[in-house]
Amino acid sequence: MFLFQQYDSFWIFLLVSLFIPFLAFSISRFLVSNKDGPEKLANYESGIEPKGNTWVQFQIRYYMFALVFTVSDVETVFLYPWAIAFEKLGLFAFIEVIVFILILIVGLVYAWRKGALEWS
Amino acid sequence: MEFTSSFSKDYVIFHKYAGPLGIIQSLADGIKLLLKEDIIPTGSNAWLFTIGPAIVVIPVFLTYLVIPFGQNIILANLNIGVFFWIAISSVVPLGLLMSGYGSNNKYSFLGGLRAAAQSISYEIPLALCILSISLQCERLPFDLPEAEEELVAGYQTEYSGIKFALFYVGSYLNLLISSLFVTILYLGGWKSSIPFVENFIQNISINYGINESFDVLKPVLDIFTTLSKSYLFLFISILTRRALPRVRIDQLLDLGWKFLLPIALGNLLLTASFQILSIN
Image 1: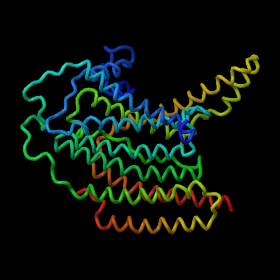
Image 2: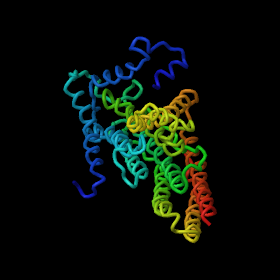
Image 3: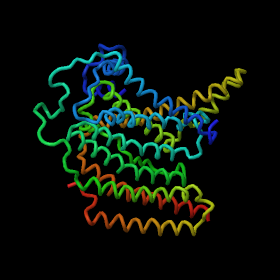
Image 4: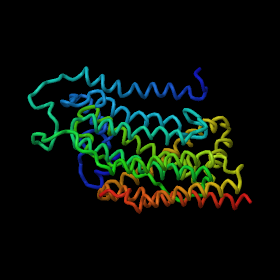
């Protein structure tokens, strides 16, 4: 029907799964009356008035984790085809992959020692 | 299921009022949440706020597409199979970030960031372990890297009603999916672990002259085996979740990056070398 034939059920399933939350939201919206109170729309801060700006300063450690994740993710993507075609590729490819992983392990150890993986 | 097993541990008779075995309890909770008013806080980004929970839950639904419940009982036999799951579940941290940012609340924002950091930290060991499996099935010891996500209430504080329910639905479905994957990849899927039981049943049905019924019975058996194995794993997950204290966020991230990632890499190289040795 579409481009790849085996993915037909995927598209249909995607449509159904998009529909389910939409259905849930619609039912909620139609069934429930919205009563407005004075404080209802205010934000929650353990029962007191919200103080200060909403958007706090972004801490660098989130960025560090995301960066290490990106590098490792790209590494895994490169390893996928090797793992699938493993038998045909033989010993030489295995040695190459070990070298590849070793380079990335050096990077990971560097990041670790430098404190990129600390949550302090 | 979580309610019945956890409450039987705590001797709370909470579920007695809601129908036999408390099954209806979860349904009642769901319906109650459906009827709750949907509040969008002031100053929040209404679009992100609404779409966030949907994006968290949709990839989980989509993953059911590729799980085999029996020999050929699968909704879509994609030849990328399990990598589809890993790829689709990478969308979930995006939904978490949207929910956290979209609520106009600094604690939600922080909570969302933390939840996203946790999600991505555990994807790498998962992907590496799946790779090791594709090198050699059946050989691996039971090494599930993906800890079930603990709900950081932070990013959920501003959600009421059905959006809240969606988060819960998503996380429980995710738990179910992980159990199913573990069952299929590690515990042998739909093959019955009791030896010879399939032959036994086949013999019985042939002896009684109902040849065709075995062809019908077999998929049912397969599905039953898959579901019971994943039920076992689900039970263990829920039990550990209730029995152990919550892990601190930095302990959790340490565990993911410093312990599981080297082990997953080592596992990968180890299985690869075994395969090489067995080929030569």
